[in-house]
Length: 486
Image (cartoon, rainbow, N blue to C red; front, side, top):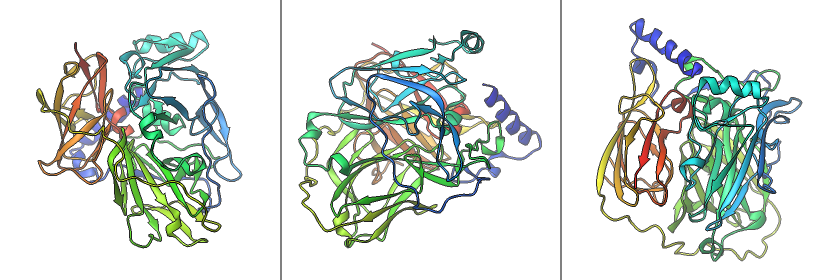
């Protein structure tokens, strides 16, 4: 809340000076923050694969990480690593994860894409207070919620299909700096339908968390806390994949499954290979935020807004052995490189023409609602011209009923819906975009667009959230509660 007040005061000062905020805001979100540390050359670091969580406990603590050569970066971590350990669960089997807070500030954990009861969803004031108890008492006096001291156990029924989920901090007014400091990790759900497909697996299945960061001269993360110039989103000048700067990874001339996650605070990516393979369609998309598509879709370029996931298969046998294949962001340069090594080997994997039957259209809606995303004169980001207030619901859908929600904006926002995945129905009353297929939990809402989604809330009643996943926008009040009623 202190951070929100500082940023709001800066925006109010601009208004008092007679300067319209919209005139100062670029069409695309974010402002570049330059590092003060010397930057490494691309493709010197090796890609790291996050370890799989052993057991059911994660300790949130500070750790010194070797991200830039010759420097250490003090990070906030899950179990001492960035990204945190990958949690793997199975559809239909309930799971619990206990988070212990050894950080100097409160934390909240949200399983992004999780079909989760309200008490374990990571509501932004349901905080895990730090120890010692004196510190916890101070924070509990400033923000009331369903709080615990020292630890909290999150319960995940896992009544959902296989998908690439992720978990991250979700504390009110502080999500941006907390995730920037390292609080993010993969959570993969598996099921029988996906296991029956002949997709790449084992070492040829790569979870890839793409983030951007800036660094201080001593190697620490550089984040402009309280700086109103960056309330539109923080962009770093170093691209990290699984916590390594512009890494390189050796691959066989074979198919690989890449689970791509944009975990950046505000940066969007337009990913492409250089060189492109003969014939195009380098990325064969098999899944979206909510799991498998009905049928695969070929792409030359993938556009990922913050929090979106794309599950793709890439056949590196389409490039000659010895080729160094760069994964680039068409708007920002290198991301990582794949070095195709060795002769062709047996590859039992393939992408079948039909992947799933679970993406059928939802039935007609019982009700339609409109949510307008914009900015107030004080600079705060708003939904339906309201800044976020815990406990104030903007919608009360009924359990089991289908609704159409219309998102309208004059600016660029990635909109995330908690509890259930949805289907995109239209963009500006026309056909959906090429990246809108399948079950989604985040939709890229571009400037001057109206996007309509169909959603059915199932299984759980209670209070959940709708918000922008540009984390600086989220921290500046672009969130709303909705309550699922019986």
